[in-house]
Amino acid sequence: MEILSSSTTAVDKGLKKQVYQDTFRTPDYFWFDPVTMELQGFHLVDGKYQEIQVTTDGRLWSQQLELYLGVYEGKLRFFTTENELILSSEELVELEHLRAQQAEERAQQAEQEIARLREVLRTQGIDLENI
Image 1 (tube, helix red, strand yellow):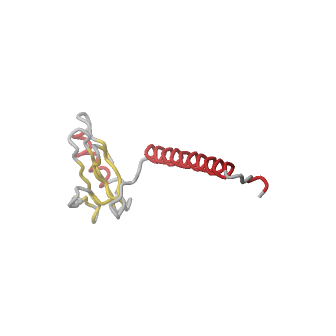
Image 2: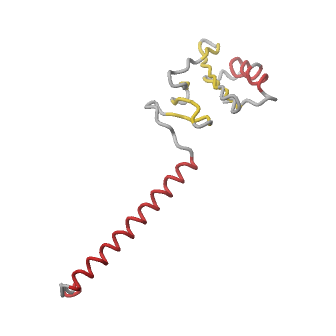
Image 3: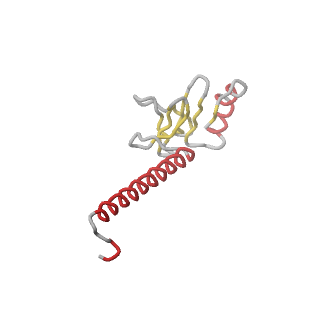
């Protein structure tokens, strides 16, 4: 995967692509331009890169990774074979933090409900300690 810039585009699309094809024999070669959102990929077939055809939703299949590459919210992202976005490590941490926060809120609500029910029982003369 090459991330293109104005200073590297010509080399990435030319010489580097040739080197990855002929010398390293890299099975898949992709480039992405974060300014223009150009995403292009190639797969090595009989020693020559063949352009990977874009899916109807604008994604490219990587046989090597067994994932799709695509642009999502202006960023290059990976997608499963079921077309599900693979979360970044930062997104996973954020999701876990949100889940932990929600679990804490549910625990607090449960504690408040238990306290309320204890009070109802106490006002009805029921002592939970002696049951």
